[in-house]
Image (cartoon, rainbow, N blue to C red; front, side, top):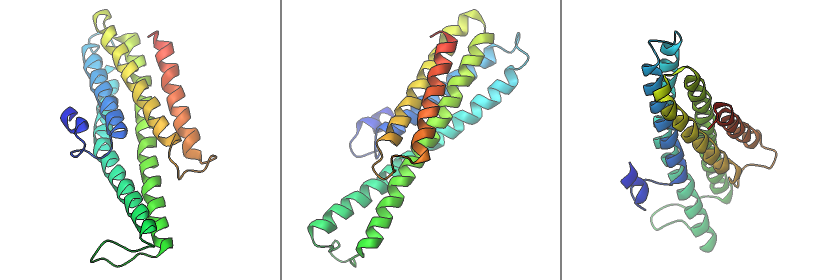
Length: 195
């Protein structure tokens, strides 16, 4: 996965998949710490199940983000080429009307924002869960729990930034506020956890 992130060709995008990967790592670490907490914490089983569900969700978001980035990039490239050629399409394809190109581009960019928002929400939830696990885990595991909180916060903030810079979202689009709220909740969880 890290080699794919470093390659300009293997994985479309970069920030989105990296944020989802970071969130998934935080969820996996939360699962590990919650498992170690079972002997002394009655709710550890629920925390384990929740962390595992979030890990699977964020793992799936790695590929969804890469696909959304690929779609948005392809639409942008096609839009720019068409504009330079006077709406001509690549050889052997029919020209798309300007309205269709704009709609396809808008849909691709909005899909990218939706995936980034989903990552921000999941990462925020992981940060809050990891902070809770940190309160009940064995003392020796607390540094790992706090690491999970910090990783999840970073993923939430990075994903919220990707939503904020999306050029197709209006300034008052609720996705912007939701992403900012997710990042803030993750930051609050880190502060409460004391890391």
